[in-house]
Image 1: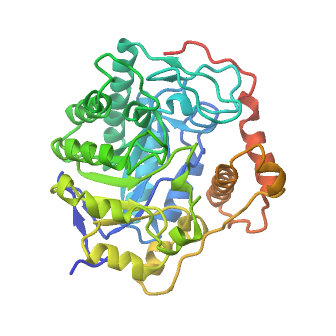
Image 2: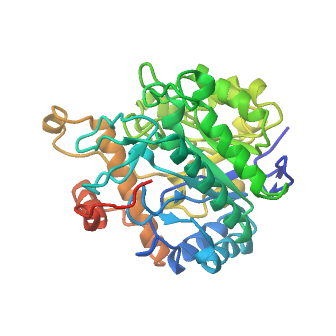
Length: 415
């Protein structure tokens, strides 16, 4: 019977010391040039001492012109190689493996950046107030984005990362290519399920061709986007089967997007009570995944549920995200038997009866909770502890303050 404490050897040879991962959280700790600095090193040094077998970074963007949010770290070339190396050393000094999560926001670029023209497979805007209509990428521009992922992966290997995780979930650019709601193309990049998944497969192939055989290439994939007519579980299973035929080392299962944020804990109480939101789906794609290990993130809170998920074979790795904000040593607490349940901070916006008439309250709650997590990561990076008294209004003000400087800045030199 597999235990949480058992090591896991990925197909490429990278060994995870145990089956608990610190899943990606968007740290937004890049400096004014979107480069990593001492803050990200300090934060990951804390997590590295927390007993995790794997640390997955938050969004590392592959293009400075297109950010998910202000403060994203960007890897386009080797200009920040020394800082990236310090980052990986902090993880390795604690005994954890570390994957760099590579991403492009596509139409989910920073909503505060008014005047910025996002890009996407097709000109379909987000169903959120203030979202700009994206410009459709040309075939040459699509290939340029694929190349950016490959170049970023190459630099990450030079910096000492154990691998990369390609972000194909949560409504970002790769997901936009996969979804029939956001990919309306009729060329070689869209029109059929096979052509819609081509972008992801080309990124995987280009990355694998640039890195060594011992460097891990992982994918974070939505089980579904939970939108009518969108990317379904059937579509997702087909993508898993296609990925299993490539040189992929780990598939992390998640779900949702900015419009339907299932990944943020914006779920019904009955779903939260079941803990692992996407475990049923992971169980259903075991055959399609073949020998590729599966990680599941979202909802795990008790050691009993984590142990059962791994020992039953439903998944190979348990991912923890928001619990690692309140307890940077969450993995050690679970493995050492020092907790019966991990805590998270759940915030609900006020004036619900009024706001509910003009906005999706689940989406608002999810945004505020993500904003709270980001603020706490900044505190942790400064050596402080989380502020449990921070309320929803203060969080919204903080989000505007952090992103406001780009609100009226028009981005030039688009893809």
